[in-house]
Amino acid sequence: MIVVIGAGYAGVVAANETARTVDEPVVLVNERDTFVERVRLHQLAAGQELPHRPLEKLLKGVTLVVGRVVAIDAEARVVRLADGREQDYDTLVYALGSRGNLSAPGAAEHAYDLAAPRDAERLRERLAGGGTAVVVGGGLTGIEAAAELARPDLKVTLLTDRLGPGLSAKGRGYVTRSLGRQGVDVREDAEVARVHADGVELASGERIAADAVVWAAGFSVPALARDAGFAVDDAGRMVVDDTLRSVSHPDVYGVGDAAAARMPGGQELRMACATGMPTGQHAARAIAARRAGREPRDCASGTSTSASAWAAPTRSSSSSTSTTRRRSGSSPDGWRRSTRRRS
Ligand SMILES: Cc1cc2nc3c(=O)[nH]c(=O)nc-3n(C[C@H](O)[C@H](O)[C@H](O)COP(=O)(O)OP(=O)(O)OC[C@H]3O[C@@H](n4cnc5c(N)ncnc54)[C@H](O)[C@@H]3O)c2cc1C
Image (cartoon, rainbow, N blue to C red; front, side):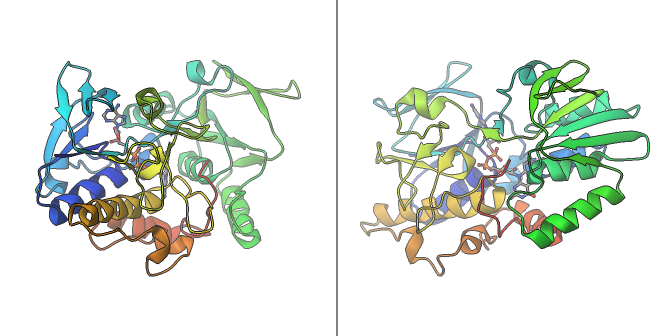
């Protein structure tokens, strides 16, 4: 029994690819029965409607279990759900993704995250009548959020230490001009010390008022891997080898944002759906190879060792691939090129 937990970009690909290549039941556990296009949640916050994507329609040969995972018993090889159900596994694929990192003072209480549909809907409701919004974070999520939210009746300020730190000089210039045209006020070298109900306070003591503060300054991962005793890095991401297998538990694989996968050369893969989908596929292939008694190929023995090889959408990906491809192509400096962590 192969159990995948988390039906995001990485988990759906891992489940489908495993079901296609391994002659064994595959179960996918997710907290809801729909696929959430996280890469579009800023659009939802800005008032656009997103397509409804039932998971059942994306899955092939995979049994869907809807429930929230609250614990993993690595000894007993059991996944425990919030409603008391238990799911046994022989092989586990850990694909629980990430959320915004709201650890800054006041952020958890007052800031809006863009990690789940409910968060984006709350932000949309808050900004329905216009006003002012502060976006904290000048990485790709912050840039996208600021650009999408800005409109004539909504003044957006983006606060960051540096705009687009993973972009080329050309890309940064493009983003700066583009945000300027949309009326977004970009302030670099701005360190947010605290979030309040009515705005933010900078380290300099300056207060900037806002009807909503959108937190886009880094991701955090669920604590389940750490709690289960799997080897994790300082951020709590599962440490995996070249085949995406846990370095501490050979019956467990980690994919997507929740795992700290590395490229040949040791560079950590950034947190992105563009990298998450290939990791899902790669883990599935490694599982299939081991089931067949073969040694799996590691990341380095793929067709290319570049970051873009990992990031390139794969043919066997779910229908979300087309969205990623479109968005990647339309971004100023390529989701695929930056290997920095998304923040
Ligand atoms: C606004 C925004 C825009 C973005 N734009 C882009 C972009 O253009 N390109 C790009 O490459 N990346 C983008 N990203 C980053 C991208 O969304 C993430 O890196 C990606 O979603 C990670 O995929 P994943 O499969 O690892 O996890 P996720 O997509 O987060 O999926 C994890 C799944 O696990 C489920 N889950 C979590 N905990 C539990 C639990 N305890 N029990 C059961 N189920 C659980 C979740 O509900 C979810 O279905 C963006 C992110 C944001 C927030």
